[in-house]
Structures are given as structure tokens and as C-alpha cells.
Amino acid sequence: MKDTLRKLVTIYGPSGREAAVAEEITALLRPYVDEIHTDALGNVIATLDGKATAPAPFRVMLCAHMDQSGLIVTEVTPEGLLRFSVVGRLRATSLPGQRVLGLSGTPGLVRLDDGVEVRDIASGKMHIEVGASDRDAAMAKARPGDVFLPTASLLDFGDCQSSPALDNRAGCAVLVEVARRLKSTASHPSITHFVFSVQGAVDPRGAHPAAYGLRPDLGLVVDVARAKTGGSKIDLILGQGPAIRIRGDNYIAPPRVRNLLEKAAIEANLRYQFEVTAAEETASDAAAIEIAGAGTLTGVLTLPARGCWTTSATVSLADLEATATLLLTILKAPITL
Image 1: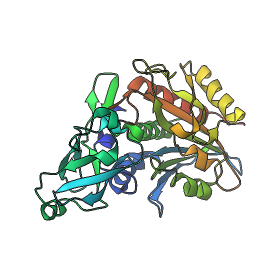
Image 2: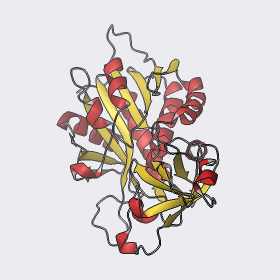
Image 3: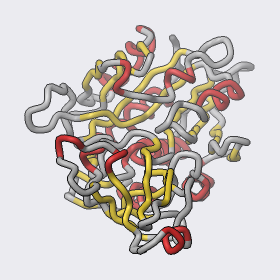
Image 4: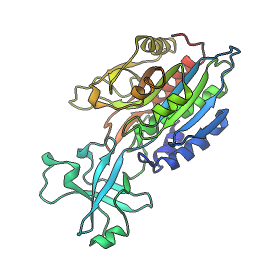
């Protein structure tokens, strides 16, 4: 899974500009699914038919958003500096000094305005330096509407992996791994749809029409969530398994889905955690999937990430592997809710 993660985190793909990520995911998935396409919004939707003979087999939608939060240029100043705002979720305190890249490879550096103290950090008091001395020179490198991303990389600590793009390429890597393993499984009675959604870091925009079109019986979302760091009151711990989200982002887990996830974790002998967050702290595709059409029972598995929503998030490969195993445990057996 590490190789897949490395490929995905190094691709330029901010919210609304996910085409290159979609192309790579399509190439990775094609050997393991029966059909795959990109819809009008840019969602990648792949299907692996189950092996059941029932006239109306159970349909599962697995979803992970593939976009990355970034910095959109809002103004080019007479001095040749780029003003920006954040697209998605990036903590302002992680931005000063961060190297960034635009779509065309234009390098930049995020810097605080003169006289701004750390306690006053906000994106409105920062700019991107692109090595231009005036507005015309800067406009030759970037224009309003261009999006810069933290320099793509994957820092390998062994089990732990760190990258600016882990939200949510980590979830995408899990889904690719599930498809790979499920393809060779003797029994998987459900029809499984793999959805890699667009604009999930901004608002769950891609997931809703995907769920509306697929009409699944069950939706399962994989995303990242904040893990405990020094001094924080967060409950999730890196390396202690995936978390079952109970509440967050205008979402409350249906008891039947919570029980399904917990039972599968116990059956597979996996460590797992529970995540309960304030509604305003997170945004995931689950809230959109569950109200699509006539409604869909939907659950969320989160990958604990230190430094979540910063330019240096860190996840555990063991947690990613456990999440894939948990999902496979559900998919290999008939599902009843």
C-alpha cells in the first residue's frame, strides 16, 4: 500500500482540479474492477460485480475524496506578491515558510506580511512569493484563480508516513487496496462501487450525485481525522487502528451501521477506536451520501492523522492496512442491516 500512497500524494490535484489524480486512480484500479468511468463532475466510479445469484444483490458504495486542500490566488499585488485564500482545510499556523507549487510547476514560498506576529496569523496576512519584483512579472507566473499546493512529497518513517496530501489520498490508497484484494476473493456477494469523489475537502459536492446515481444499500466513507499530539485533548491515537465515526460534520452514525463496523472489527481481530467530534470540525462525504435519493445508511471509518489539516500530516500504514481488512471482512460475507 505504501507504493500506492507514494504515487497518489505526489500528484497535483486540488479541489476542483482533480483530473490528474483521477487518471492515476483509474490506471491503478482498472485491473481489479469490471467497469470504470469518470462522471460529469469528475468523480471516478468503478464497479466490481459480486458473485451472488440473487435477482437484486446488495449494493455497497465505498467512498474517499481525492482532492487536496490548497491556496487559491485572489490578488496579484503591485509588488509582485500573490494574495490567497485557503480552499478546503489547512491550518494557517502550518503555512508560513511552506514551499508550494502551482499547476505549471511554478515554485512559491508562503511568507507572513511584514510586522505580523505569530499570534496574528491568518491567511489574509500572508502572501506567496514567486520571485517577481512587480505585478507584470508575477502575472507571467500565476494569475487569480490559480491554486498552489504544498510541495508534494512522502516522508517515510517506516510504519508512519507524512505528506501534505494525506487528506485524503490515504483514504484513496485504502480503497485501491480493497479493490485489489477483493478481485481475487472467492466470495464477495455484494456489488461494490468504488467512488473517488471530487471537492470533498471543500464540501461533499461530488459524493452526493454519485450516490444519487448508484442508489447503494450501504455507503462507507474512508477519511482522515485528527490524532492526539502533545497536550491535545483528542482521543484518537495513531497506530491504534481505524476509528468508527459516531458524530461529526452534520452526521450521526446509524446504530445499524455502527454495529456492522464494530462487529467486523471484532471478527477480524482488529483494534479500533471511536471518533466523536464537533459538527463544525469535520467535513466528509457521509453527510451527503446518506441524504441522496430516498436516503442511504452510511458509515465512516477514519484514519487517525497527527497534524491533520496541516502541511505535514502523518498516518500509520498499520491503520491503513487494518481499515482495508475491516472493509474486506464486511464485503466477503452477505450483509444484513
